[in-house]
Length: 327
Image (tube, rainbow, N blue to C red; front, side):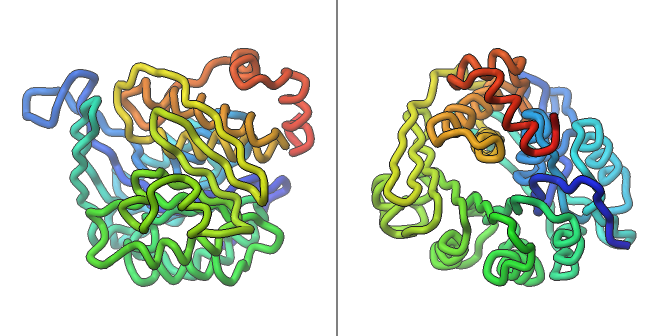
């Protein structure tokens, strides 16, 4: 049954989320540390961060009819994410991964082969169309999961069945998932999007580029391109406009999830009609909260503090929310 919406979500984030097993702060995957279960997935991370920033976000995916699927849905529901586009599979399991955190970078071990989400296909398109979002957010993780997932992402991006919706694409290159050269496929998808997020480090792995301007030249216009350069800065290219914002210094606890938070912050700024500089600053703020947390989702400051740090008057922030039907 296709869900109906009196008020549509502003953003639909489509992709797999798994049960993430990670140690408590200071621990490792070593048999001596206490472990916790949390949701772990790029697209659901974006959805949760968007909700935390005051937006209506839905997550579209599949999970198993198992306790781990229950765990994911409970956590996302408690975070306020719309789950009407999630299908439960009675045959296939929810995927699992283990994260061994360290400030310099985490080691991640995936157990996702044959998961319920890997069985996603074009049948997911109808419910997303019916939801009527302003933005469909996808990542480069989903098309490598299975042929049906690849067909689904290509259909959403190339055929544009969701009328009037922008397509946001986070390149999110995961080398361990690819058994082929990911560069050409991810470049083709990036060129088809309206908004692209990519880290300069991953772009340099994928393509013959050395700086943000090279990435812009390779992907081309009319894509709105955001290139993240780690702790240095983020650059937005939109037509002839180029805007740079330095990344504020933060005490890094664990880096996984920061890119998703950045994308959510930038998209929140887009939805509220903020200028490019404010969007980048909001992306940095959200990413910084994730960097300072052991989980993929950080704790954002109150609205007044967000406005102060990104240089937007509270009235302007509230006006953006009212324009989206929230005020």
